[in-house]
Length: 258
Ligand SMILES: [Zn+2]
Image (cartoon, rainbow, N blue to C red; front, side, top):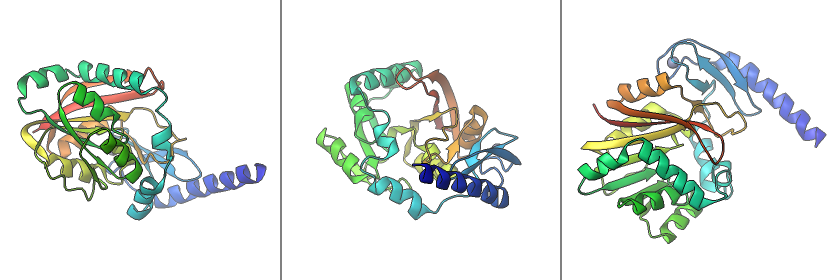
């Protein structure tokens, strides 16, 4: 155990040094950055202009995708999920706080796509509200679980997915953006799957979670606002709150094509 702790300490020192050496400018606003923290896996920088926290050295796409595609009990899977009914009820409150009911009244077709849908619990919450909800999920085992609940799910990374049923009235990126290598490219890509009167919902943690080494970014409100605007999306409604279940401070936003 002590041996492992020593190795982690050494690896953390190494990421600090590499972070200083390879530190890139802010990928959202190109502003300058300062050191923010380091783990055994990543060194993080904080943009002094927009507040984005980001990995100094971007891991390769194959490495990032492999972590999700193969992990049967990846951190993103096990952490939440103690009481699904409570989790869904909690998410319904978030959707209500963002005024989703207004959209539901104004949208006849109600076709939704959840990117990174996991086991299909958010899909279930949407179905309970009358949405025709589908998903995209990289992890095969999670995608299977969502299919077993009756949902149509494409097994793919967001960067490669070609959802067959576009355009959608509602796209959801729930705790996904912070895991992606290139959030701007991802937003640009999913905007193309949105109908002209469609809505995009993004939720992401507002505080850095250095224990979760899958997080490549932590957005501030300013950084998320800028990322949306730079990709042709207009933020309309914001909601930040502390998660009842896990005490995470989250930021949610509903945006439309600009
Ligand atoms: Zn920035």
